[in-house]
Amino acid sequence: MPDTESIGELEIQEEILKLMQDQHDWSNAFLKHMLRHALPWSEADLAASRERPNELFWEQRVNNALSPARNSSLYAKGHVEHGRARGTHRITEKGLKFIREEWSFEELDAEMARIQSSSGSD
Image 1 (tube, one colour):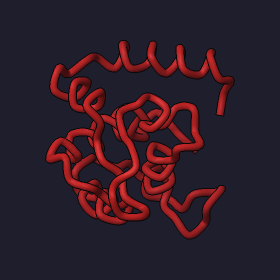
Image 2 (cartoon, rainbow, N blue to C red):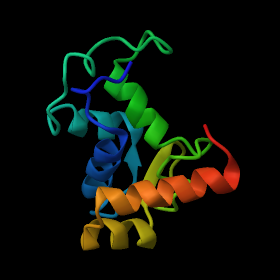
Image 3 (cartoon, rainbow, N blue to C red):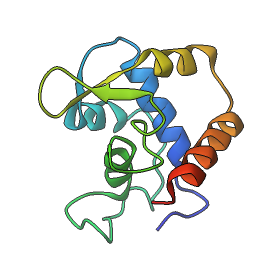
């Protein structure tokens, strides 16, 4: 479903890390609440997901970014770990270093490619 107007996964992940810099535990629901108005979602982003009809496309992508089972997630990159409460997430030292040093999308993309090549694709 992504189109040229959709917000990219890397941009979504970067915005999640920016929010998580406070080092609190974050639930998916609260992250989605905060992200709802943080990014300029396109019409395609605001459409219902084909894979998960009860979610908007952008919400599905937030869930994907926070899924420990996905090779391209913030967990796979070591930027996020499980929070203290069930169903919560918190930024790691690696995630803080990444977001505070503002590595480029190209560097993140290269890291994603490295992770995917070492463990297969999603």
